[in-house]
Amino acid sequence: MDKIIGIDLSGKTENPTGICFLDAHNLNFNTFFGNKEILSYIYKKKPSLIVIDAPLSLPKGRCCLSKDCSCSKKGGHFREAEAEMRKYGRTLPLTFRGMRMLTERGIKIAEKLREEYTVLESHPRTVQKILGLSNLYKDLTKYFELPENVSEHELDAALLVISGIFYAQEEFMEFGDVDEGTIILPKENRNINDILNFKMFP
Image (cartoon, rainbow, N blue to C red; front, side, top):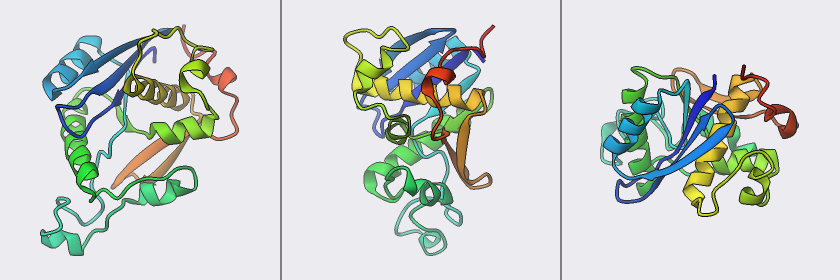
């Protein structure tokens, strides 16, 4: 698994989406806006794994996130995954306006990508907390060469790539119900230096 893409997805297409592509030992960064350009880039790179920062499914019992729909009485504001991972990091209700837009976009993109690729969900702020990365840019330069002008969204996408590396090495925690949707995070108390030695690559 030598090609991993991290996507720090924005809720609105007019806002930047940060992309990080791990190709063997190197990180490559890009910023895109529309769904078409995001998908076009991914199809071109043909990754082994994609990790996205966005809810990729709805809470059980919901057909949508509208407060006016009858499903709002059957399903809640959170999935089991968010409830389980609260001990590690704060998550917002999926019914908040911004989160609703992000969830709807995330589901749409993930459904398309899952026709060809393995797609997982993670949470960069919580990844950063678990790994103890206080100065994200400075800490990541210990393991990768980073451009000086890398954006905060691209750095978050790099955290998603790292979450994917932990997943590939089976050093991950998974929260939630598989039928409803899960979130992966790096296992706590693991030495990041051991994980990022790239022994998984030939």
